[in-house]
Image 1 (cartoon, rainbow, N blue to C red):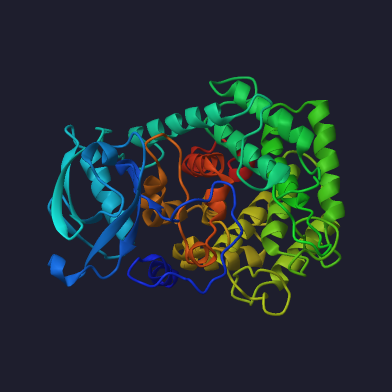
Image 2: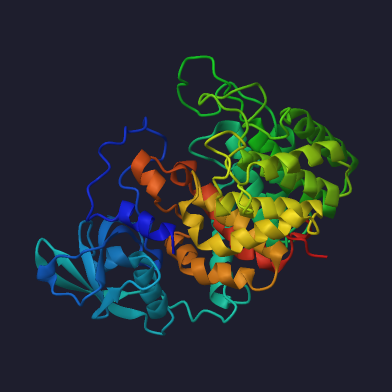
Length: 489
């Protein structure tokens, strides 16, 4: 693995804190230590690479320092405390092989909760003393062979999370977020709506029909509309372009295209036509797309290919839904996408010097998804992207800004690539997904090298609707209910 050791090194408590990195301004929902959720245990923590020799653990053993105890979980009931260091689970040390230490703990917790009794012990170091705690986990049954699809335990987990999402939905149909303003709310509401659709509901039928209908109505009304302050906080001065509408256009169209496939009303046809034309109009002269139209942003650049890939994926979804997006716009967008690559199939940040060739598996997965939606599987660059994604998939957690966004793109890329790619994805990230699940049914963010350095985790500050909608959607992609976005015939 290439990036995971670096990520591990940045997160472990055994290393100095990144005090040299300038702290970000306070953001809503960003409090305490950025840490890993510890799955069904009901706590958060960070790994310690080199446990104290006085603890006399086996060679290669790791430990986890608890940073937070969550309400209503087994950790609280067992008496686990913040600053405890977990060294043994059921009397056994945790030894890192091919995963981070936290996932060793999550794997152990999953095994315990698969038994009828759900009982084990945690041995912790507390103020230089050894303390053994009796642990009682909920008995959730064993995972199925094709987890998460066809796995009774995971399907129940998804159903519970959808209930949580339904409870988060506001009366007007939108979902709350911590940062990002209206454009961010469109993205989160669209992902939540897709998660309900992936479960089999439509805007007219199924247990989540009302949630889907209200989400679709709100997204159709708000999608692509600029607002005065998309960040929900004081803007720096300087006259930079802060338009963020291209994000909402892409996410909104991806969601509404699936709605239109199921219920092609004249009103939605007209609205999607308007949104398609706006996406086309917002394309830069280069063929790429920016956060939104209007020139260089606060960091003095224009295009970024993560947005360009999203716009192409959205245009592809429209094409599959029966619309006719401009072929000229698509050709220019694809040409710009390819120009960002260094030739190995990896999608760069942009075609600008210093950003071209910066291949990233998350951006590349989104490129695969865009080509799949556009019906361009025969294009030679599709095979190049697929090859790059497969050989770098394990590096998804190191993606810029939002690992969860990259995981979502990867899930859809796997659906289009077929073969063993989904199994490979789940082999790498099944425990990551399960680790993110909290006892209250929501999913949490995870730290990365970038979030530790910047003291800011976008996935965390976007809030539980973002994380829960994304992970619930990822786990349901193989169901094939989203026929446009997964390429299912």
